[in-house]
Length: 403
Image (tube, rainbow, N blue to C red; front, side, top):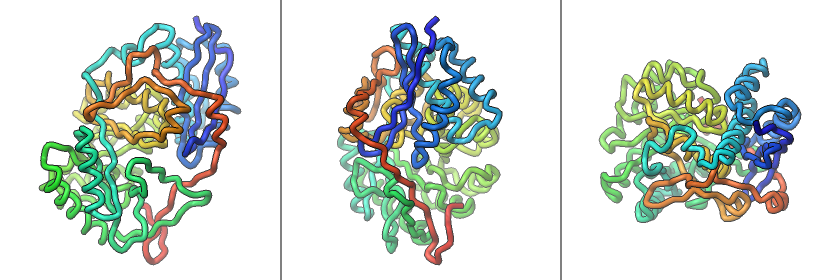
């Protein structure tokens, strides 16, 4: 059995912060796991260093399920983003180790490929509708079959989800939280105009997605979904906060636009009612925030019973380690829907050399044993941690706003 003899946390900031767990075995094999929690990175680093790593030393690295259960049930204070991101890092690293020892890519250990490649969507955004359409046309020319479209809200100085750079978007943008101003009625007017322009420019053979970022009440979300039905959106993401899962019943009563939710979910319990009551069409939970490959497979299996597909979060707050893990999961899972893909910067790719590839709107994790991602620790050490917060939202009258 490969015994865990050491583990360490690597924090680096090649343009944005990443937390990586490296688990080392006496077999001379190590595995990597992503532990990045955007805006709260050091909390997970501490959790791993102070509370998890001491419990790993001496354990059989092949006992992935047992270690997962030990870390989840043994913590007593279960779930939550910090705990589940830490468990995810351990779980992902152990799958990496198992694949390397077996000499197989992780997707083969998960049952093999269920498809030839993984359809991904890119982010087209701009200050104006025209800017967004131009960006979307560039994505379409690159072969993307699915594109998320976002544009600025007229009259608003800034809009969450709209980047100044058309490819590299980092929402955690300041040493203290940026405060954005929000106007729902203006937003509700511009989005149908955006979709109309997108269909006219891009045609009907490309999937169009849109992220609401939890900004609407259920009835507002229902109204927007109804307004967009004629443009056949692939999904509307995070229409309203999912703490009150009953809210999605009201949205369902008013629109047939497909709904996606779950990038901030941490466990199967966050998704259980939404899935069992068929209130969503895509579950967005991802490897690093939902307990790793082991737990995400359980969520996908439950969703499969109700004809709900996966659509894992894949923004740049996930390191290439998590991106690779997601692709192995995507390639293997039977009810895959789509994978979010935001390309990393050259600096990040240099720190995390990887085997996954993109071509014609599809990605593949590659055939390297394990996850197919490594970390250049010497290069990583040159990029020191830089505190960065996600923005907060206020209405124009100053009220804190994020239903």
